[in-house]
Length: 155
Picture 1 (cartoon, rainbow, N blue to C red):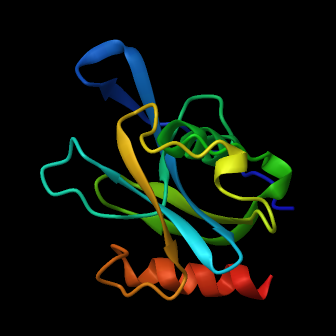
Picture 2: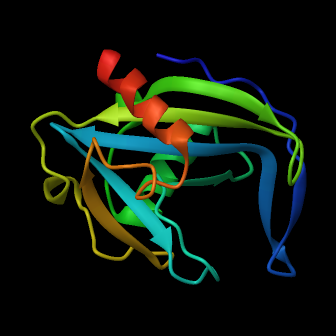
């Protein structure tokens, strides 16, 4: 199990409200698979919604693992535990702000996505769909996401 790093948070106002702050020290992406399928989401509020793995920013006081569990539940309704996560990769990004990006994977094995709480639309408005692991990069936003799935299969 990956041991969380202590990160120095950089916070900004979310949506212009100073009462809700986002921690920009880290972001997370979560690749979830079972058998030969994976879960994707897309934000329909976005001007050009693209299919991608669930993920988002870490909130103040959260570890990257806790953020991954929360984002997956908020965006798709899927429930996992921190202990199920496998750290697949991490990198430092400079845009839009300097932060660490953590890529996690979880293999739910024989469980179905529905048995883990999958919803058609997440709490934050994302649409969900389950696709075969051999989906083309046109279906999945980033080529890197396919590489992450290959890493998860090897674990």
